[in-house]
Amino acid sequence: MTTRIDGGDGADRPAGVAGADLFTNADLRAWVARAERALVRHRALLDRLDARLGDGDHGENMSVGFGDAVRSLNADPDGHDAGELLRDLGQVLVSSVGGAGGSLYGTAFIEAGIAVVGRSSLQVGDLAVALDAAAEGLARRGRCRVGDKTIYDAMRPAADAIGDAARQGQDVETAIRAAARAARVGMIATRPLIARRGLALRLGEGSRGHQDPGATSCFLLVRSMLPGADGAR
Ligand SMILES: [Mg+2]
Image (cartoon, rainbow, N blue to C red):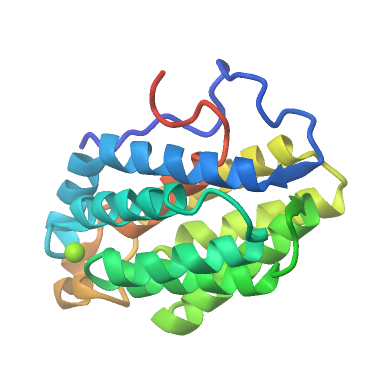
């Protein structure tokens, strides 16, 4: 099965946020643009994964939603702290991403924004707080836990990895790289699971052996936080 995606540990990366202590609003905007490109690039893969477990439109839904997210960011080039920016993005995603992904990712971004409202640049500890709030918001909204074969299976470990990195005093890129690795592990771990949420529920045992499309898009989003990780290489 061709579900292979480059890992979060590629060797060829531009400097970008390397060694930086802050994830700025410019980084945040650049991330959303990279995320959109990554989702478009992997649209067919996400649709194919979703065709096995759901209704086959996750790649399309995410590409459309993040296209709208990029347009809304570009239409609003300044002001706003990171929290407002994330919240606004969440509102766009709620209305623009079709399927369950809209309310789940939308809630995640909104909760992340609420968690860091008033911050204009995020330290690693702020990123950890934001991602933890995103993961917990998503879990509440989707009533899911790790192992249910959902987005959360990639998001929770990514949040935990950034939390660990923050406690260890690591820089932004090191923290994000650890999160991308953790998200990838979580994504792959969904393959043998039986789905306990979403459309895949109806498949029961038949959901086993297929990678969750939501965990896959979540990995792509986390990996996109790294400069140069938009799949252009
Ligand atoms: Mg779908």
